[in-house]
Each structure stands twice: as structure tokens, then as C-alpha cells.
Amino acid sequence: MPDLILGNARIVLDDRILTGSVRVRDGRILDIDEGQSATGDDLDGDHLIPGLVELHTDHLETHYSPRPGVRWNTMSAIQAHDAQIASSGITTVFDCLRMGSDESSGFERGEMRRMADAIQTAQKEDRLRAEHLLHLRCEVSAADVLQHVEDFGDDPAVRLVSLMDHAPGQRQFQTLDQYTLYYKIKRGLSDEAFAHFMKRRQDDSARYATPHRRQLAAFSQARGITVASHDDATLEHVEEAIGYGVRLAEFPTGLDAADASHAAGMSVLMGAPNVVRGKSHSGNIAARDLAERGVLDVLSSDYVPLSLLHAPFVLSEEIEGMTLPRALAMVTSTPARTVGFEDRGRIAAGLRADLVRVRHTQGVPVVRAVWRQGQRVA
Image: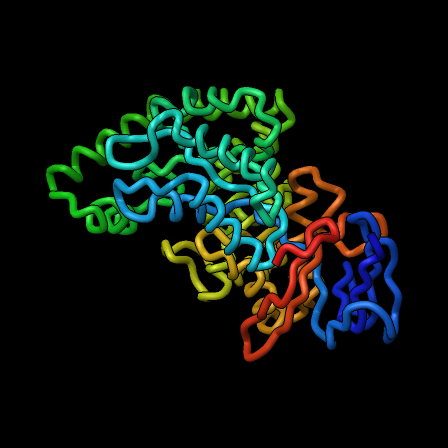
């Protein structure tokens, strides 16, 4: 095939933005030339950025289970999810699969394994635009979490495991106000039913959280899987994470925990919707505060795919000293490096040609084209 030449673009490199062209051959970036180009596709001054790397999205669940008790056709759900992911500029996505269930939420054992099988089938059949990998979200206080994880054995698609405990009084829900909103008001539980539910979750956390956390960390380390902590709130939580070999600190809920995680060499992840909205939906710390402190490393779209592209532009405009290359690194090179990928996340000769054409207009970026390994996918 002839070379792909993307010219007259504002190319976002690691440390600067230059106007020039990128030449792609056999799915890799061949070279970068500065200046106007008379050949190839004219990008008309739009930004050309690396394909985004998404480590934590729950978005697939909303397609598979769009209403309580509803299960959509698995392949259809995956394709709908993938289409929105790719059109948001994401070329590598870690789909979150929930491990562990309780009496009022979660999925039965086997459902997530079937989902994973369908994702792999969809990739083999060339149905998908982005590259999909797996992130197992492990509820350590759930009695059956280890059984759910057993279904994934030595699956090479599993590249990330997060350890979380959503019991009342733990981490994200250290106070009961938000927990009551999430689990009582939204679900319409009576006072008696809510009290029963909360007591059982607390008892399960006391019984299972520590041994499950230890076993899941060992499971991951033995297979070379990156381990993430979730909602760390205290310095004790951070010390625990260090002991488990955690490389990614997801959604720390306290400034001290975020500072300590960053200082320990972990990549601190916060939600891109938090940046766009200017606050956390659950009442925890604002991602912008961490950016101003210099301890925000990675962004995740979490529940709004386009926010992963939108948030870096917000940070570069609103945080003093935050350049666009530095902000975009939070959704490209840093998440790629955190999970051990050195072949993507930057525009540089020899790397994968995962590229996104973006026009930033009226405060919201527009994705105009996406290439994965040099092939146009959106």
C-alpha cells in the first residue's frame, strides 16, 4: 500500500507542537517533517494527536445492561460501545469487567467471561475499530470475587486488575451521605432493607477484603498484570498499595493519599468527567486540584467517552503552566507506559500509527478522523 501522509497539521509531540506532516508506512510512523506539505491528506491546520489510551471505562456495562434486569445482545452491545469509543479518539481501550456480586447488583458468574469471549471474537472478525483489552474490577469485599476471577485464568487480554472495596465506611464511602444516595435513595430501599444491606456489606468487608486483596495481588503479579488500587483515602491505604506492587492509583479520595501515591512512583488516575465538570460526581476531591499540585498523571473517561479528549484541552486552558502536550500525555503516553506499552501513546518514528485528527472549536474538541495502525477507523 502507498504511504499515508497527513500534512498541514498541528502535530502534538511530547514537548511541543509543530506544523508539519506525518508519514505512515506499514502501520508505523515513518517520519515527521516540519513545514507545509504539498502531498498527502491536507489536515487544514487541525491538531494531530496520538490515539488515546483508556484504562478505566465502565461504559460497556451501560450497553450490555441498559436498564436494571435487562441484558442486551452481547455482540451488539460491544459494537455500540466500540463505535462511541473510537469516535471519541480512543484507539486502545481497557474494558472494565466487574468481578464479584451481591444481592442487589453485579453480574452472575460466567456473564463477564462470555462478554470477554465476545470481545475477542469481535476482534478476530474485524468488527471493532479500537483495540480492546481487559480490566478486571475486583470487589474485594464480595464473597465470590475469586471465583469470578478464576474464569479468566491465564487470559492474555487481561492487562489490568483493580482492587476496590465499596462497603460503607471504606474509601470512597467513608461517610454515609453519598452511600445513602447511591444505595438507598437511588434503589428505593426501605430503612429496614437499607440497614440490612449496609450491615451485610460491612461484615463482608471485614471478613473478605484483606485476604482477597492479598490473593488478587499475587494472582496479578504472577501473570505480569498491572495492579491498581481504588479510592485510596489515607496514607495507610497508600502504604498497603505499595506493598501489593500497585502501579496505578485510581481515584484517590484525599489529597494526602494522592500526593503520597505520586511520590511513591504510582500513576495517579482521576476521572476526565471530573475535570470537565470541575468537581467529582461523588463529592470527593477535584481532579483540577491534583493537576495544580502536579500529582495528576492519568485521566479516564469513566462513564463519558468523549470526556477523555475534552479534559486535556480544559486543563491546558485553565491550569497555569499546563501545556497541551503535557495534558494530552495524561491520556496517551502515561497510561500506555503505566501498563507496559512502549509502542504507542506518542507521535514518534517507529511507533504505532495510532493517530487522531482533532479540531478544537468553541470549547469542545471535534474528532474528524481516527487511524489505528495506519488504517482509518473513524
